[in-house]
Amino acid sequence: LEWAADHAEDQKRLALDVISTQRRALLDARDDGDFSAEALNAVLAVLDADQISLELKGAPADLD
Image (cartoon, rainbow, N blue to C red):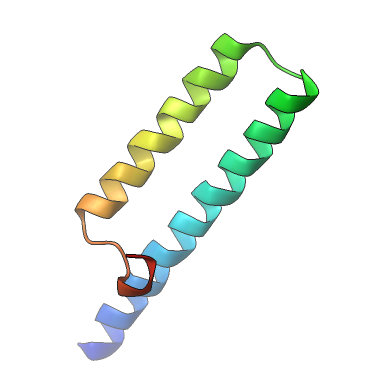
């Protein structure tokens, strides 16, 4: 049971890291002018929703 809790925490941490990496890539693309502001805002809103969902489920302790 402890392993399962550790595994779930690792999964959340990984998912939050992926979201952070995706957000940085999108902001870099914005700075480069690669995509419209409207398209980037839509994708960033999805990332925000995903992050909020994960955090409501209990973010890993070391990310608080």
